[in-house]
Image 1 (cartoon, rainbow, N blue to C red):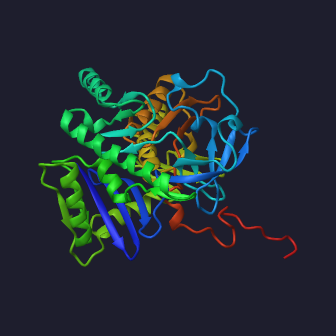
Image 2: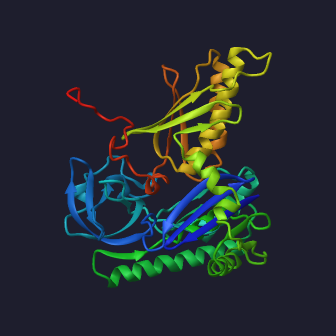
Image 3: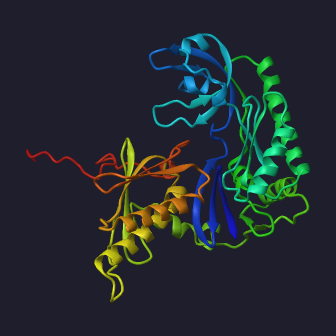
Length: 416
């Protein structure tokens, strides 16, 4: 069972997703400062840089957006030219173009945008010009995959493409058809706005944070949403009635004097899980450090000495197994993206290293954001990547120290 705990305070909305009482996702959104991810813009090409095979597009934000050549070519690899053309053959300065935000602006970098458009719904993702149908790999039964693939191909028109989502495994034709019709209407409206509005202009913004999470995660019959706002509860009930017709919405309003995050133990969990050092159930701990290029995670035995008969190898492997499970959860909770290096405690046996990597991969399958375990380096470090689409969840709520500027060290002159 999953619980979505939604806390509203002034113009800030925070949401924690709990699985069996444990926080696995956290996100926050200022109601007046919605993110750009997934939004559509009518933009104007400012610069075309053949040397970088990229262009910069004015979408009306502080920084121009970055458009790479691969995001201009046809979305279907089979329909792309064998030899990649120069970006200058595809775009020219001053050209108006519809783009969708693929990655949020981060630091000094503007948003990354694409022309591989996609509109997510409850049961499927609609891609108006992709030209192919795909089925989620998380749908295990081949009979379901074959049925949904055939249904998707039957429903598509012209160059349309679809990705059938995991939650559609047992869904029927009518629900998927309704979802597709809604998304088609959204795309038509985007095209109509693009024809009438000047550039740069916002054409379509993705749903709010809570709407996206409910759309992607909520399972009728078992999951529930708990909020501290009656008005928001009514909005959520209406949304659930639309996406889960026939199911009684499981929505509750927290009315106690205690903060909703305190009442459900969320705040205590976040305080522990967003710390630099996070303790493991058996007494070991992990340390998470961020650099400009990557995130480094170090695993230590700490207080864990194993049970009486355990060898050193068994003790180390058990600590690493606990760490693998916790690292996958923390990556998801803290929305850590980019390159990640994990320094597990050294294991002598290759079978144990394989077991630890397999455990991490298994836990990462629960993550809605794509992550890949690349393997062990010659130095015994485990390499992995996780798609980075926005700044890490901690960044809006932490501030660099004015003395050390976030390094943890302060220069002291030998002259004093």
